[in-house]
Image 1: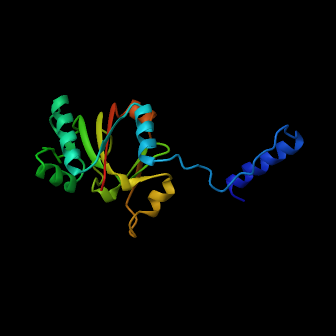
Image 2: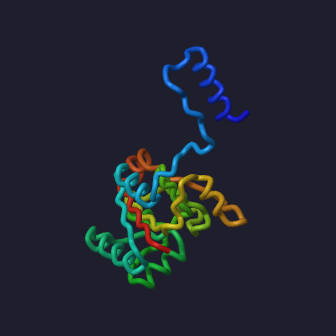
Image 3: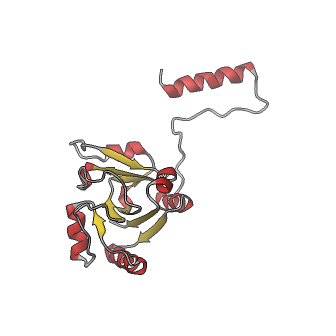
Length: 190
């Protein structure tokens, strides 16, 4: 018997001891109802938890928004957490370091994002390796709309055949207030 079945059994037992005045609907297999557009839901969740959300219609808008943010905030010594991201940003005139020198600003790709919780999933697949021992105070994440899912299970199902060495989740709320002081999430169309 699964944990869900045990809880449901306890709930049913408590209801039968004290019959409710109103009809109790049957619990369906799908616990989380689709909340509409996952990108909109994610933007609302990230913003409610203190993060900054940027929707970009294409790659050019992504680069432009990133450059504008970096220039506006006067950030220097931005740490890129993968060689492929470093090469991509460098080719678009956004200088980053890949020396992992504990910079105050870091930028990363992600494996996926759970729209319902605002959780950002990082894996060794993004090329971060073991260098991300702690998060920088200002953390920028770049994702595409096809990396936004409704459940963790959907992200796991989209992993490559070879499992990653590690999987890490950044959950909105406590981690952002304790370790990550500012979270910027850039989402673009693929």
